[in-house]
Each structure stands twice: as C-alpha cells, then as structure tokens.
Length: 121
Image 1 (cartoon, rainbow, N blue to C red):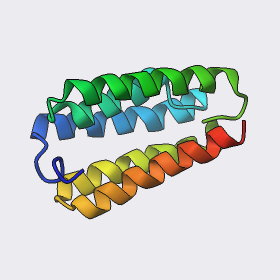
Image 2 (image 1 turned 180 degrees about the vertical axis):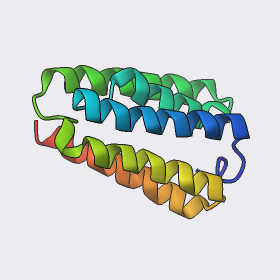
Image 3 (image 1 turned 90 degrees about the vertical axis):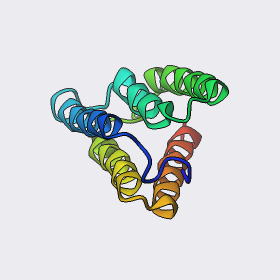
Image 4 (image 1 turned 45 degrees about the vertical axis):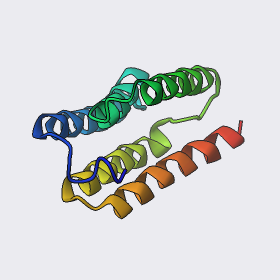
C-alpha cells in the first residue's frame, strides 16, 4: 500500500469510487456484491503498480474465493454486504489521502474479514 498511497491517478480513484458505489447498489438490489465488481476493484487498485505477477496472483485468489463464495451459503450476503462496501471505501479514502498506514490497515481488515468468513465454511 505504501507504493499506492497518494500516488493513484485521478482516473483510477474515480473508477474506484464508482465501483464502491456499484457495490452499495448491488447490496441494496441483489443482496450481495457481484464477483465482477469485487475483482474489478482490486484490479484497478493495483493496476498502477504494473506488476504482472501480483495481478496474476490476485486474479487466482479472487477466482478461488468467488468459486467458494458461490458454493457457500451466507458467505458475503446482505448481512455483511454494506460493511464490505464500506471496507472498500476505507481503502480508497486512505489511498486518496496518501495515508499508507491507514490503507494497509484497511486492506488487512478486509482480508481478515475474508479469512474469517472462509473459516466458517
């Protein structure tokens, strides 16, 4: 996150903001964040690093996570969907503010949440 904080182009920040809004809309309308929206968020967040290996690892992780999510009842449903959208918003806010420590904390909380939900299934 230290390489991203305060350094993302304005276009990427605008795209991340739009994806967070999409997440909120999806939760309200469908009860969960769509896998394509979640993946798009993380692709855009890390895109400016121009790191092909990281991109491939993230894609592999999200593919596996969303495959498990599709098979596990209650994983990422409306009960926590709004909080998940807020987690993504906190990441964007910290990156925009140039606060690498807060961005890293927000990402860790997001992944801690994912690990917790996965361990319940």
